Length: 315
Image 1 (cartoon, one colour):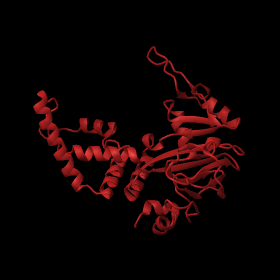
Image 2 (image 1 turned 135 degrees about the vertical axis):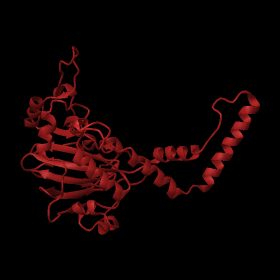
Image 3 (image 1 turned 90 degrees about the vertical axis):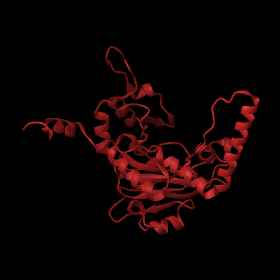
Image 4 (image 1 turned 120 degrees about the horizontal axis):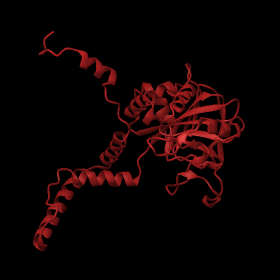
């Protein structure tokens, strides 16, 4: 499989998809360093605009911290909206050992949006991006499982990762691994990432990480896989395609006739549908939900066009 976007992080993409994908974690050291579309300089720029706010920004210190600890309110048009990222509060919390998390970077950062669109086209999956900043010697999130395959690109400093076993069967949940889940999963890999290194964490494999040297920052490319609810939605959408029935049949006879037509329509659609097609439809729907490219025009171009004489106007 030719996947140049994926290859810049894992090298031989075909070997990666055959030997690692959905199977086992891996550490990669690209010759040019793993590319990150988002850096600490981009973080500075995003927060310095004054418009950055929750829920795109979070802070963790064992647990998620209350928003008031790292955001502030603003006076805007005689109202006082809250939730704006407060640089001073964020720096103070980082100095005390908290971790900064930026959510859905692809929704508000154009280079990351473009990068993820290219990767999604290669993998056929919905993908999101998250950015983490963790002080040296401090743990980020607690031991947890992600409902996604994750490519971690180390951007600054270094971070030590602890990877544990994946789920034993299909009866597992995403989120924190607790005592209620039974014996803790065994650690199967411990590695320290330096700038440019890449780590692959398969879906469901428990993991946690701590900052090692300097202020550690990494970009997480989170590759989502569909689940049963997505398959149900895709099935419902397929059965409803080209369905032309009255919304409010009047009387028992009309209701029965409409129900018969509905059953016949659904039966015909089910007869044509294969399991692979249903999975593909669910994945395609997920990709369609990713942020779209911004409108090609710009206010600068609009202004320039408005100053250009039209063809039917005198020169």
